[in-house]
Length: 207
Image (cartoon, rainbow, N blue to C red):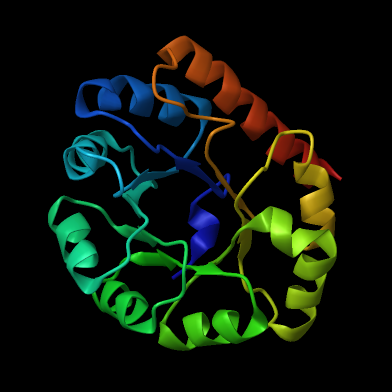
């Protein structure tokens, strides 16, 4: 799968999003330029929110599920219109099922062994999680042993101020959670936060 179509390569992690807030949140994020939206499954109403966001997603965008831990989760998200798998872990059966359904697969890895297992199962991008634990030096080490061009997306503690350092270490995208979306944030606030992340990403690419 060619991930260059998803620019900027920033995944909005919408943990705790409720269906009544989904359309407003989606409009704010899509309007700011986000093209990858993830609703974690470990909160009530996630599948309904995924379905709502998938219906309104503009061309060149993908909506999917996060914290997808089982093949049943993959099937449920796909049935709801989700086309992206995000997980905190590397479960090769889950990755293979999502890949077979044509979903963008971004499982979580924290070691080279997990990274190679994930790629072997069909992963398209690697969610480096928790990014704070792996660190800049760890990400650089990942890059030296993985196939050239492997998309590496740190997740956990990423802010606009730290994105440049992560990119210098080898990051090619990011997953952004609490610094972007928290339940109760207004659409205007969400738009301001989203604009800041998009601007910071573009600044890393300008040089």
